[in-house]
Image (cartoon, rainbow, N blue to C red; front, side, top):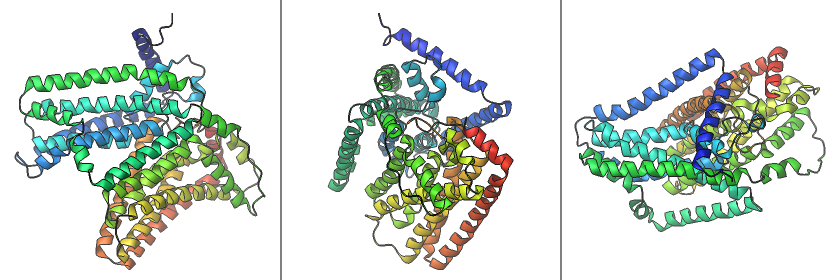
Length: 511
């Protein structure tokens, strides 16, 4: 009798997951383990600071904007759920604890794979920032009294939303892997987007948010702050019980999805491509190869679509002003680099050995990879800005210059930083899998945090310059920043020209 859906299978999955984590840990050097512990401690300290700081450092309670911010809590909780669902869907059900090409030698159950993806879900800077926002808003609104108590419903909701999003991610991935699954998914996505646009156009967004089921979280928070122990206990208990149920039952769609063939990956790998005339230069030929590597990789195709469209739709729904649009290109560029740019040479995988044997100058190879990454970032940012500009009104010359030049600056910044990391710390990755990431999940968190910090600061700088209205000043600042990024890019190109360094990178990414 099969026990694939029984509780004993879940217990076995926990043991399998522990073994997989030990396997991954065994591959870390002593220095990497030390940095990992320090990074974990830093995140915990920052989380504690975000929770306690607003409660104690914002003056006496009640606070001027406390009620308004608390009223936004259900909407923020709903947004956290939406972001978690988007992340799970975009990553084809969740990240892998062990890459697919390494896991084939181990009898890893689908339940263990599900638990591993759930465990890796918080290793996402967007997830962390959203959690910090929920904790900070709650503690600011209600102050230090009973802080450890009234924050429990928020913590319970974070766990439940993550588990629900993971389960839904597996459902969507199962649909994608079915016959004509890609078409079905695109139709469903179009229906969801059309419904969202219709809701925004109707002006009833606030009414819908006021009826959100996440009001349950707000009621639990108010019960905890008011000393209603029973009201708090049953709400937190119900949320935790639902979390356990979502974790256990989430293995069902995971099993269904993972047992279905990876149709999109197989279609791309087994497709036929008509040969085209040879380009007129080595650079153009290498650019063509790199573009094909990007667009024939399932995670990159999906990621580019999400990055280009979703931020623009958010800006469209929120009717963002031009000064605020300066933030979006940096976020899009950061996300684009995280698709493959932070480990850019992994695009070649085992083909890197063949690529390195071609009679082409190393600088030409480097220039082609930088060009493809730059055009990907700029193209995604342009789509986002076009969508955001629909309801932004007519810009002033200063605002337009700040948005356009700021986009160029952050794109060049990200390319310079990403290629430097690609040469300094390459990883062997199989980007054919829809669940693959260009670097280990923990490393990706560090990359995303650094990119988000740099691009956000740059976006805020150009937003401030837009207020001044001086096109000349914006152009001078942009020129200085582009020249500095170009200098960093040139230094990385010189390192790439070193045969020893280049051989190290090629040997690593080739596995």
